[in-house]
Length: 314
Image 1 (cartoon, rainbow, N blue to C red):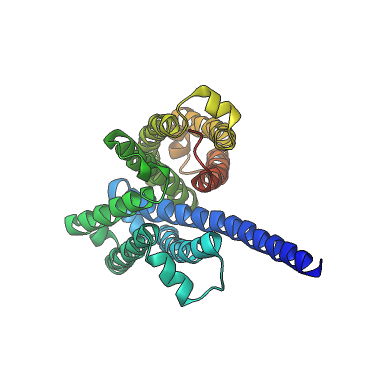
Image 2: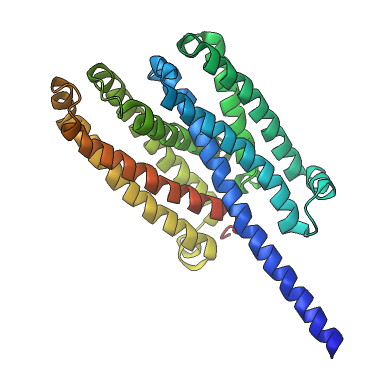
Protein backbone atom coordinates (compact mmCIF):
# COMPACT_ATOMS: atom_id res chain seq x y z
CA UNK A 1 0.00 0.00 0.00
CA UNK A 2 2.74 2.58 0.75
CA UNK A 3 4.17 2.02 -2.74
CA UNK A 4 0.75 2.69 -4.26
CA UNK A 5 0.41 5.84 -2.21
CA UNK A 6 3.84 7.10 -3.28
CA UNK A 7 3.10 6.24 -6.91
CA UNK A 8 -0.18 8.15 -6.75
CA UNK A 9 1.56 11.11 -5.10
CA UNK A 10 4.25 11.15 -7.80
CA UNK A 11 1.63 11.14 -10.54
CA UNK A 12 -0.27 13.93 -8.80
CA UNK A 13 2.92 15.97 -8.40
CA UNK A 14 3.76 15.45 -12.09
CA UNK A 15 0.25 16.53 -13.10
CA UNK A 16 0.54 19.67 -10.99
CA UNK A 17 3.92 20.47 -12.56
CA UNK A 18 2.54 19.96 -16.07
CA UNK A 19 -0.47 22.16 -15.34
CA UNK A 20 1.77 24.85 -13.89
CA UNK A 21 4.08 24.61 -16.91
CA UNK A 22 1.10 25.00 -19.23
CA UNK A 23 -0.03 28.12 -17.39
CA UNK A 24 3.45 29.62 -17.58
CA UNK A 25 3.65 28.58 -21.22
CA UNK A 26 0.46 30.51 -21.97
CA UNK A 27 1.98 33.54 -20.23
CA UNK A 28 5.17 33.17 -22.28
CA UNK A 29 3.16 33.10 -25.50
CA UNK A 30 1.27 36.20 -24.38
CA UNK A 31 4.56 37.99 -23.70
CA UNK A 32 5.83 36.96 -27.14
CA UNK A 33 2.65 38.17 -28.88
CA UNK A 34 2.88 41.49 -27.03
CA UNK A 35 6.52 41.79 -28.00
CA UNK A 36 5.78 41.23 -31.67
CA UNK A 37 2.87 43.67 -31.60
CA UNK A 38 4.90 46.45 -29.98
CA UNK A 39 8.05 45.88 -32.02
CA UNK A 40 6.53 45.25 -35.45
CA UNK A 41 3.59 47.60 -34.97
CA UNK A 42 5.68 50.33 -33.38
CA UNK A 43 8.31 50.14 -36.11
CA UNK A 44 5.59 50.19 -38.75
CA UNK A 45 4.03 53.24 -37.11
CA UNK A 46 7.21 55.33 -37.27
CA UNK A 47 8.03 54.11 -40.78
CA UNK A 48 4.61 54.69 -42.35
CA UNK A 49 2.87 57.30 -40.24
CA UNK A 50 5.24 59.27 -38.04
CA UNK A 51 8.97 59.19 -38.90
CA UNK A 52 9.63 62.19 -36.65
CA UNK A 53 8.20 60.15 -33.78
CA UNK A 54 11.37 58.05 -33.74
CA UNK A 55 13.01 61.04 -32.03
CA UNK A 56 10.41 60.88 -29.23
CA UNK A 57 11.73 58.92 -26.25
CA UNK A 58 8.35 57.40 -25.35
CA UNK A 59 7.95 56.02 -28.87
CA UNK A 60 11.39 54.42 -28.80
CA UNK A 61 10.55 52.91 -25.41
CA UNK A 62 7.50 51.20 -26.90
CA UNK A 63 9.63 49.58 -29.61
CA UNK A 64 12.44 48.67 -27.19
CA UNK A 65 9.90 47.16 -24.79
CA UNK A 66 8.52 45.10 -27.66
CA UNK A 67 11.97 43.78 -28.50
CA UNK A 68 12.73 42.87 -24.89
CA UNK A 69 9.37 41.14 -24.45
CA UNK A 70 9.84 39.25 -27.71
CA UNK A 71 13.25 37.91 -26.71
CA UNK A 72 12.05 37.02 -23.20
CA UNK A 73 8.92 35.33 -24.55
CA UNK A 74 10.86 33.25 -27.07
CA UNK A 75 13.41 32.08 -24.50
CA UNK A 76 10.70 31.26 -21.94
CA UNK A 77 8.65 29.38 -24.53
CA UNK A 78 11.56 27.10 -25.42
CA UNK A 79 12.21 26.21 -21.79
CA UNK A 80 8.55 25.82 -20.82
CA UNK A 81 7.82 23.69 -23.87
CA UNK A 82 10.36 21.21 -22.55
CA UNK A 83 8.89 21.25 -19.04
CA UNK A 84 5.33 20.95 -20.34
CA UNK A 85 6.03 18.22 -22.89
CA UNK A 86 8.49 16.03 -21.06
CA UNK A 87 9.10 17.37 -17.60
CA UNK A 88 12.47 17.27 -15.93
CA UNK A 89 14.63 19.94 -14.34
CA UNK A 90 15.26 23.17 -16.20
CA UNK A 91 18.71 23.18 -17.76
CA UNK A 92 20.64 22.85 -20.99
CA UNK A 93 19.73 19.15 -21.53
CA UNK A 94 16.05 20.10 -21.47
CA UNK A 95 16.63 23.02 -23.86
CA UNK A 96 18.73 20.86 -26.19
CA UNK A 97 15.95 18.29 -26.27
CA UNK A 98 13.45 20.94 -27.36
CA UNK A 99 15.80 22.41 -29.97
CA UNK A 100 16.17 18.95 -31.51
CA UNK A 101 12.48 19.01 -32.48
CA UNK A 102 10.90 20.83 -35.42
CA UNK A 103 9.04 23.05 -32.95
CA UNK A 104 12.25 23.94 -31.15
CA UNK A 105 14.07 24.71 -34.39
CA UNK A 106 11.32 27.15 -35.37
CA UNK A 107 11.75 28.93 -32.05
CA UNK A 108 15.51 29.01 -32.58
CA UNK A 109 14.85 30.77 -35.90
CA UNK A 110 12.57 33.19 -34.04
CA UNK A 111 15.36 33.95 -31.57
CA UNK A 112 17.77 34.60 -34.44
CA UNK A 113 15.21 36.92 -36.02
CA UNK A 114 14.98 38.80 -32.74
CA UNK A 115 18.77 39.20 -32.86
CA UNK A 116 18.43 40.71 -36.34
CA UNK A 117 15.60 42.83 -34.97
CA UNK A 118 18.05 44.11 -32.38
CA UNK A 119 20.28 45.36 -35.22
CA UNK A 120 17.31 47.15 -36.80
CA UNK A 121 16.40 48.62 -33.42
CA UNK A 122 19.95 49.76 -32.68
CA UNK A 123 20.06 51.64 -35.98
CA UNK A 124 16.75 53.34 -35.17
CA UNK A 125 17.96 54.32 -31.70
CA UNK A 126 21.15 55.77 -33.12
CA UNK A 127 19.90 57.58 -36.23
CA UNK A 128 16.26 58.12 -35.22
CA UNK A 129 14.33 59.97 -37.95
CA UNK A 130 17.08 59.48 -40.53
CA UNK A 131 16.77 55.73 -40.05
CA UNK A 132 12.96 55.74 -40.08
CA UNK A 133 12.98 57.58 -43.41
CA UNK A 134 15.74 55.54 -45.06
CA UNK A 135 14.78 52.83 -47.54
CA UNK A 136 17.50 50.49 -46.25
CA UNK A 137 16.15 50.60 -42.69
CA UNK A 138 12.58 50.11 -43.87
CA UNK A 139 13.53 47.09 -45.99
CA UNK A 140 15.39 45.59 -43.03
CA UNK A 141 12.48 46.25 -40.67
CA UNK A 142 9.99 44.73 -43.13
CA UNK A 143 12.16 41.64 -43.63
CA UNK A 144 12.59 41.04 -39.90
CA UNK A 145 8.94 41.83 -39.13
CA UNK A 146 7.49 39.52 -41.78
CA UNK A 147 10.01 36.85 -40.82
CA UNK A 148 8.91 37.00 -37.19
CA UNK A 149 5.23 36.90 -38.09
CA UNK A 150 5.67 33.95 -40.44
CA UNK A 151 7.85 32.01 -38.01
CA UNK A 152 5.47 32.56 -35.10
CA UNK A 153 2.64 31.39 -37.34
CA UNK A 154 4.51 28.10 -37.78
CA UNK A 155 4.26 27.49 -34.02
CA UNK A 156 0.44 27.48 -34.11
CA UNK A 157 -2.24 25.16 -35.43
CA UNK A 158 -2.06 26.49 -38.99
CA UNK A 159 1.35 24.86 -39.46
CA UNK A 160 -0.45 21.52 -39.89
CA UNK A 161 -2.80 22.79 -42.57
CA UNK A 162 -0.53 23.05 -45.57
CA UNK A 163 -3.16 25.10 -47.41
CA UNK A 164 -1.78 28.28 -48.96
CA UNK A 165 -4.93 30.25 -48.14
CA UNK A 166 -4.69 29.36 -44.46
CA UNK A 167 -1.01 30.28 -44.29
CA UNK A 168 -1.64 33.63 -45.98
CA UNK A 169 -4.59 34.25 -43.65
CA UNK A 170 -2.41 33.48 -40.63
CA UNK A 171 0.26 35.94 -41.76
CA UNK A 172 -2.36 38.60 -42.50
CA UNK A 173 -4.03 37.99 -39.12
CA UNK A 174 -0.77 38.47 -37.22
CA UNK A 175 0.26 41.48 -39.31
CA UNK A 176 -3.09 43.19 -38.79
CA UNK A 177 -2.88 42.48 -35.07
CA UNK A 178 0.65 43.90 -34.83
CA UNK A 179 -0.05 47.10 -36.77
CA UNK A 180 -3.23 47.72 -34.80
CA UNK A 181 -1.94 47.02 -31.29
CA UNK A 182 1.54 48.44 -31.78
CA UNK A 183 -0.01 51.54 -33.29
CA UNK A 184 -2.32 51.91 -30.30
CA UNK A 185 0.66 51.81 -27.96
CA UNK A 186 2.60 54.46 -29.89
CA UNK A 187 -0.52 56.60 -30.13
CA UNK A 188 -1.21 56.29 -26.41
CA UNK A 189 2.33 56.79 -25.09
CA UNK A 190 4.01 58.75 -27.88
CA UNK A 191 1.49 60.99 -29.66
CA UNK A 192 -1.32 61.83 -27.25
CA UNK A 193 0.72 62.94 -24.20
CA UNK A 194 2.35 65.64 -26.36
CA UNK A 195 -1.00 66.98 -27.65
CA UNK A 196 0.72 68.92 -30.42
CA UNK A 197 -1.83 70.27 -32.92
CA UNK A 198 0.24 69.42 -36.02
CA UNK A 199 0.79 65.84 -34.84
CA UNK A 200 -2.86 65.39 -33.88
CA UNK A 201 -3.97 66.71 -37.27
CA UNK A 202 -1.61 64.50 -39.28
CA UNK A 203 -0.86 61.35 -37.31
CA UNK A 204 -4.24 60.54 -35.74
CA UNK A 205 -6.21 60.41 -39.05
CA UNK A 206 -3.44 58.34 -40.64
CA UNK A 207 -3.54 55.82 -37.82
CA UNK A 208 -7.34 55.78 -37.84
CA UNK A 209 -7.28 54.66 -41.49
CA UNK A 210 -4.55 52.11 -40.83
CA UNK A 211 -6.43 50.75 -37.81
CA UNK A 212 -9.60 50.35 -39.87
CA UNK A 213 -7.73 48.33 -42.49
CA UNK A 214 -5.90 46.32 -39.82
CA UNK A 215 -9.07 45.44 -37.90
CA UNK A 216 -10.83 44.45 -41.11
CA UNK A 217 -7.89 42.21 -41.97
CA UNK A 218 -7.91 40.64 -38.51
CA UNK A 219 -11.64 39.87 -38.78
CA UNK A 220 -11.54 38.39 -42.29
CA UNK A 221 -8.36 36.40 -41.74
CA UNK A 222 -9.63 35.28 -38.33
CA UNK A 223 -12.80 33.91 -39.92
CA UNK A 224 -10.71 31.82 -42.33
CA UNK A 225 -8.53 30.52 -39.50
CA UNK A 226 -11.52 29.73 -37.28
CA UNK A 227 -13.21 27.73 -40.02
CA UNK A 228 -9.97 25.87 -40.72
CA UNK A 229 -9.61 24.95 -37.03
CA UNK A 230 -13.26 24.13 -36.30
CA UNK A 231 -14.98 23.30 -39.56
CA UNK A 232 -18.51 23.56 -38.21
CA UNK A 233 -20.82 25.59 -36.01
CA UNK A 234 -21.29 22.54 -33.81
CA UNK A 235 -17.56 22.46 -33.03
CA UNK A 236 -17.68 26.15 -32.16
CA UNK A 237 -20.47 25.56 -29.66
CA UNK A 238 -19.51 22.20 -28.19
CA UNK A 239 -15.71 22.01 -27.94
CA UNK A 240 -13.28 23.55 -25.49
CA UNK A 241 -11.43 25.21 -28.37
CA UNK A 242 -14.69 26.66 -29.63
CA UNK A 243 -15.60 28.00 -26.20
CA UNK A 244 -12.23 29.76 -25.85
CA UNK A 245 -12.68 31.19 -29.34
CA UNK A 246 -16.12 32.50 -28.37
CA UNK A 247 -14.58 34.25 -25.35
CA UNK A 248 -11.97 35.78 -27.64
CA UNK A 249 -14.68 36.94 -30.06
CA UNK A 250 -16.68 38.40 -27.17
CA UNK A 251 -13.74 40.41 -25.84
CA UNK A 252 -12.88 41.44 -29.38
CA UNK A 253 -16.42 42.80 -29.80
CA UNK A 254 -15.96 44.94 -26.68
CA UNK A 255 -12.64 46.18 -28.07
CA UNK A 256 -14.41 47.15 -31.29
CA UNK A 257 -16.90 49.18 -29.26
CA UNK A 258 -14.01 51.13 -27.72
CA UNK A 259 -12.46 51.48 -31.18
CA UNK A 260 -15.72 52.87 -32.50
CA UNK A 261 -15.70 55.47 -29.73
CA UNK A 262 -12.18 56.47 -30.79
CA UNK A 263 -13.20 56.64 -34.44
CA UNK A 264 -16.22 58.74 -33.55
CA UNK A 265 -14.04 61.21 -31.64
CA UNK A 266 -11.67 61.51 -34.61
CA UNK A 267 -14.61 62.26 -36.91
CA UNK A 268 -16.37 64.75 -34.61
CA UNK A 269 -13.81 66.31 -32.28
CA UNK A 270 -10.35 66.07 -33.82
CA UNK A 271 -10.60 69.32 -35.79
CA UNK A 272 -11.90 71.07 -32.67
CA UNK A 273 -8.96 69.72 -30.63
CA UNK A 274 -6.52 70.98 -33.25
CA UNK A 275 -8.10 74.46 -33.26
CA UNK A 276 -7.82 74.53 -29.46
CA UNK A 277 -4.16 73.52 -29.83
CA UNK A 278 -4.46 70.17 -28.12
CA UNK A 279 -6.62 71.30 -25.20
CA UNK A 280 -6.34 68.58 -22.54
CA UNK A 281 -10.07 68.51 -21.74
CA UNK A 282 -10.97 68.12 -25.41
CA UNK A 283 -8.44 65.34 -26.04
CA UNK A 284 -9.17 63.47 -22.79
CA UNK A 285 -12.15 61.38 -24.08
CA UNK A 286 -9.99 60.13 -26.94
CA UNK A 287 -7.23 59.21 -24.50
CA UNK A 288 -9.75 57.25 -22.41
CA UNK A 289 -11.12 55.31 -25.38
CA UNK A 290 -7.64 54.51 -26.71
CA UNK A 291 -6.58 53.39 -23.22
CA UNK A 292 -9.62 51.12 -22.93
CA UNK A 293 -8.95 49.71 -26.38
CA UNK A 294 -5.30 49.04 -25.51
CA UNK A 295 -6.06 47.33 -22.19
CA UNK A 296 -8.86 45.18 -23.59
CA UNK A 297 -6.84 44.03 -26.56
CA UNK A 298 -4.35 42.43 -24.15
CA UNK A 299 -7.15 40.06 -23.11
CA UNK A 300 -7.71 39.21 -26.77
CA UNK A 301 -4.03 38.28 -26.98
CA UNK A 302 -4.40 36.23 -23.80
CA UNK A 303 -7.25 34.26 -25.37
CA UNK A 304 -5.10 33.76 -28.47
CA UNK A 305 -2.29 32.44 -26.25
CA UNK A 306 -4.67 29.94 -24.64
CA UNK A 307 -5.93 28.84 -28.06
CA UNK A 308 -2.38 27.94 -29.10
CA UNK A 309 -2.27 25.35 -26.31
CA UNK A 310 -5.77 23.97 -26.93
CA UNK A 311 -6.63 21.16 -29.32
CA UNK A 312 -8.59 22.38 -32.38
CA UNK A 313 -12.24 21.46 -32.55
CA UNK A 314 -12.01 19.28 -35.65
